[in-house]
Image (cartoon, rainbow, N blue to C red; front, side, top):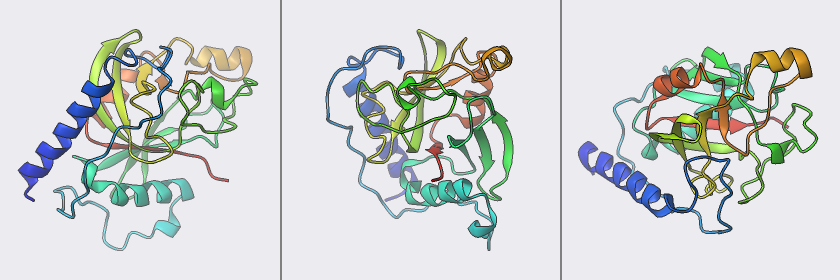
Amino acid sequence: MGSQALEFTRRHFIGAAFAATAGLAAASCTTAPRQVATPQPLPTPTPTPLAEVVPEPGLDLASLPPLIAEALTALETNAVYLTHRDKIGVVDFGLPSSEPRFHLVDAATGQIERSWLVAHGSGSDPGATGMLQRFSNVPGSNATSRGAYLTANPYYGQHGLSRRLIGLESDNNMAMDRAIVIHGAEYVNRSLIASQGRIGRSQGCFAFEQHEVGRVMDLLGEGRMIYAGKLA
């Protein structure tokens, strides 16, 4: 399969997935999800190489922080679904919400280029401790899901500029049904850290500071991978 055919397959998949879920959960994770249990199907993988095969020759994953090494492995596993492989988002949910834990990572070197505050779901932290306690992929859980996501199309919703996400693994393949997206939120604010020791919680979305979400979306764009995890 050629590169044009691969791109058509990828875009057809994204379009079909969005069309199938557009009426189920309106444009934000704050909307109550429909109680369904049918994840969106993924396209059949193909071994066709992409243009951006960028990890440096001899890059030693063992020399990198373990979560970044895990994310780069997932990047190779899910390469067929991606348009761009030059950079990825890596979310370290082992850190408290008071620390910048959404990292933009250079996939060639494994180095962090910049980091932002990001919220986790209230269902992942029922006691509002500021630490993610558990992941869940269940509709209605209001929890964060672990795993690799594909960044999809941007849109304007309840929280303004937002970007849809497609879950690529069994741990997050309900992301479209649950309307798990990137968006900005007033409850992600550094001033809250000084007053309560943490930022607020989402309903499973990757929520950023309002003045930063546009930059996050621009740098990641459409067709890149986000990897969310927490080391044991």
